[in-house]
Image (tube, rainbow, N blue to C red; front, side, top):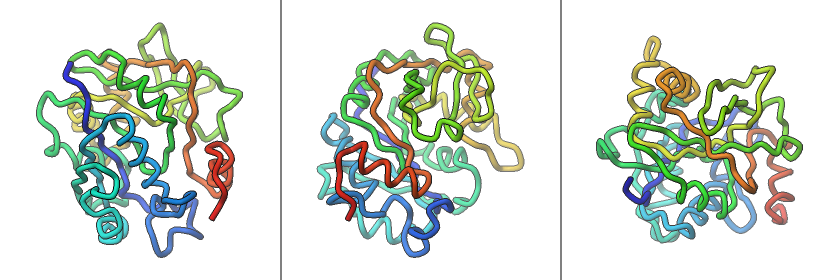
Length: 244
């Protein structure tokens, strides 16, 4: 499989659970240390060798474009895809970027409110990805998960993912929100559409049925999903930053 040098970031939604911060700006533009949440993500991607980033926008997309520009400040080439249906589920935002990738082009996929250590990104980039499959970073150190009740759970057998969902009662891993993908993900999302809508997890369930969804159980996971004000506070501690 070709070396991955391209990433897809989903930044279309508003982030209603962070409403006090997002009336004027997208959640990913909230200040985080000396940068923004998405700025921290872009800096990390550049450090691990990513060259190009596709960002799917929606809510206040002009502000996101004007703030990040073409990526010069980050040493990256940034292009944008507007999802006019950004109020729908996140699978629609992923699908909006389909034409930004060649038919056999591998890429990283992440959300614009998830922070990862460089070592996590490197471990996933170095992992083998088979043609037609999708690889998910999985954390099995459940004691260190912030707000595990709200986390996406997975059932893993060997390196094969057998089930995924927030409401699973029995599980042995947590979805970190970090994927190494082939365009097979787009095919799975297309098949999952119901009345023009689908979530990313709907596409993952389709991949599970086709036995094309694998897990990379991380040796040392350091990450956070900034979904609530409480998670935002925790993120500063987890990544050793002073709140600004």
